[in-house]
Length: 226
Ligand SMILES: [Cu+2]
Image 1: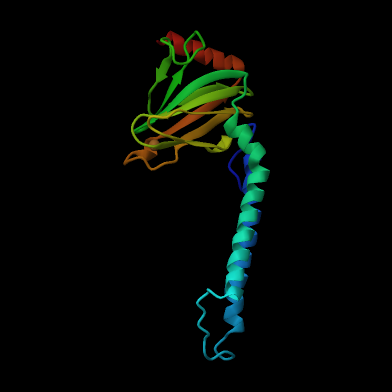
Image 2: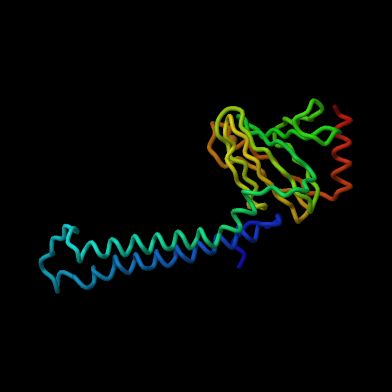
């Protein structure tokens, strides 16, 4: 049974594994809570216990259970932190050195704006190319590291590419730099995952993953259109 959306980036499965990891911890806590809730209802049914006992919860024998719960919760949190640390470092702390394309993706009311580096291959120079069209596509080559500067022009948006397991807030005044490597050719949704105004749902753009040749052809056409 496949419960996840299509998977098309080098670290999709790492993120999916984290989902299952947290699911196991939360699942155990969920079942335990239900037992703790339902068992006393049955045990203290009014046919057996006609008069309820009033518990203030500040006696030692009651406090013990609060502390046990807190400790178990803290252990779970640290276990998750410990196990996920590798994935966190890979996806968020280090951008790989060999980057094929460095782009800006800017959220605004209501569209995603893409800024490609110009023929000098460097972003934030005079020859950068701005693509600001509703539902436009960001073209990238397959199996290459893409570095993304995520920004916002007005309010908070969130750059969400489900197939890449990529989701980061775009915050005005800040540049959030992340990366991904697409592993499957195709056209994938790039939408906004933060309610950002009445036309929030217009922010449906796409990432097109294509071969190196197709990508270079796209770039040269883009440069010619300038
Ligand atoms: Cu938005």
